Amino acid sequence: MFAVVRTGGKQYRVAAGDKIAVEKLAGEAGDTITLGDILLAGEGDDLADVSKVTVSAEIIAQAKSEKVIVFKKRRRHNYRRKNGHRQQMTLLRITAVGAAEAKPAKKAAAKKTKTEAPAEAAASAE
Image (cartoon, rainbow, N blue to C red; front, side):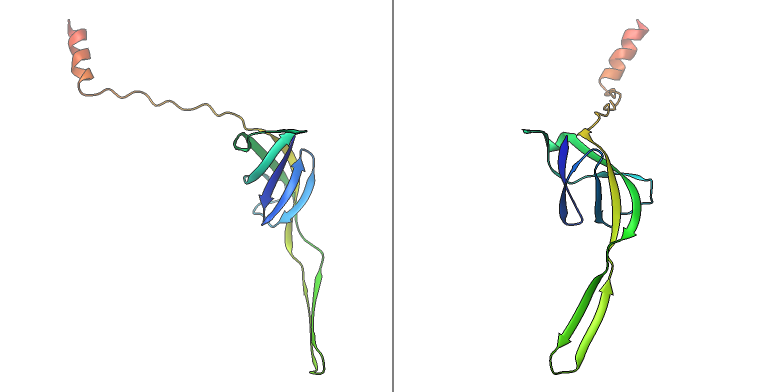
């Protein structure tokens, strides 16, 4: 099964076992997270209801991407600036793409109303 998820302003097509590098997410290496913004899900040609699909991933590492050189120059003005930037990123291993486990709904005990309470007390007194 595959899913298209959005994180860090980008979209990724993922399946179980895939490794992806995304914008930095909170967490330590070894933590398990759930990617919440699912845009599309399916298997083969069949599409699934995205509200019933979850994508869970394990954080492999927090790292930096490759250095990007920023060079500015204005001709004939003796102006040159050179900067480097390394973006923070998180390496993820997709552990599962599939249907969400249905959590059993907690049923609250029915509260007795004031009109039912005296009727039950009278019935038990007889």
